Image (tube, rainbow, N blue to C red; front, top):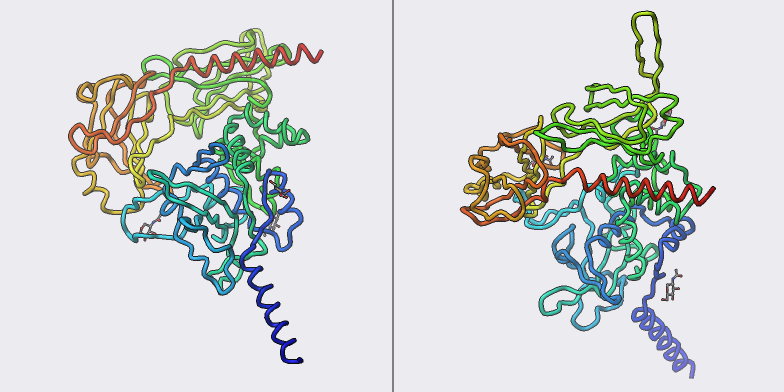
Length: 491
Ligand SMILES: *[C@@H]1O[C@H](CO)[C@@H](O)[C@H](O)[C@H]1NC(C)=O
Ligand SMILES: *[C@@H]1O[C@H](CO)[C@@H](O)[C@H](O)[C@H]1NC(C)=O
Ligand SMILES: *[C@@H]1O[C@H](CO)[C@@H](O)[C@H](O)[C@H]1NC(C)=O
């Protein structure tokens, strides 16, 4: 009797253990608010570096009726590898038929040492985001994947992490969560709003208590507007700049303000013959009465000062040769007069526009990128190459050429405006990449495009067309008119 009871109990225990194994559920995160809650309440606190990783995932998938399809290779890109779920107590349920678990996020994973990697790397905003604590490479995303005829499908997304002491390769079940497609869609919504106008919209939607100065500060500490919506998200989750002592950005000690956050628009655009044109709009009556000077800076120096206070909008054409980094700054002024002269003195800075930037580089392969950029008004090619040595043999017959527009035939490049890739000049590294450049004799102009031929006329990549200044201007005028309408309706 006694013995059979013991058997019964051990059977029950075994059953309980079994049911434990087959029904692992984790808290399901549906919104950024859920994310906020787990970082505020969960002990031990989940790794904050999970958020940039999740943001990366959200930005590289398509969600169709809650079905998730990756735009990348989830078995190789972004530090991914097969995950066996084979710890002593497996983290997850056994994979459903036809599914595999893959884990992504290990930025130290090198699949083929010393070769130009055929796989996509995790971007710097995930590995070493500015304004956050050091990334200890613990955060991971586990995907439950199945192969459809010609693509991968993601069935489940788990956010997880390694234990703080790396004695085991296992993941910490106490800090594992399921991520719903709804949260991923919300993160996609964020990524659509990285312009200053977009950031203000997000701020109005999520937390109106953040003022323009704080918003300005977030963008500065993040190191620019690239993925600044992620910085705002981290701020909303109380993860940004939490225990940071150092400040980042180009000028850590100065306290500059962004003009666009004050509804003043100043920018540098492509003028004629490789020259820079300055434009402004939104100068209020007060600003004009008090007097303000438009100052053009490059990275170090003032290159041009113009006392302009009569018009609320206008432009100054073809001032200096166009270069990356040119920026308009507005300054207060004081005037002193005598019988013979009147002198303008620049006083404190009011605000700054954005630095002039060439359009982003485009990928050629997963280890090289091509950019069309401007130096002293001329159209130049720039190659970004991963830290690997055999690229020269892979590109031994490759060349880059300049085209008048996106619609030109491949053979119709601008005469003499091309170069072999192996003849590009090496420049100082950008940290992440080796840089090689070549400048043509053609001035930048809207529509110009660079194309990369791997060999003969086999095109491998083309840049976006050099932007026309009118597109942004229309957008700015539109934004300004909306602003006027809004302030009128508030009166
Ligand atoms: C997320 O939604 C599911 C239902 O779809 C619900 O069961 C779960 O509790 C929600 N998660 C949170 C954190 O509220
Ligand atoms: C943080 O900054 C303060 C003041 O600048 C300094 O005294 C302190 O040592 C810094 N702490 C760390 C951990 O760097
Ligand atoms: C580039 O690779 C070399 C050799 O593999 C290595 O020693 C060096 O640290 C790498 N540099 C960077 C910036 O990763």
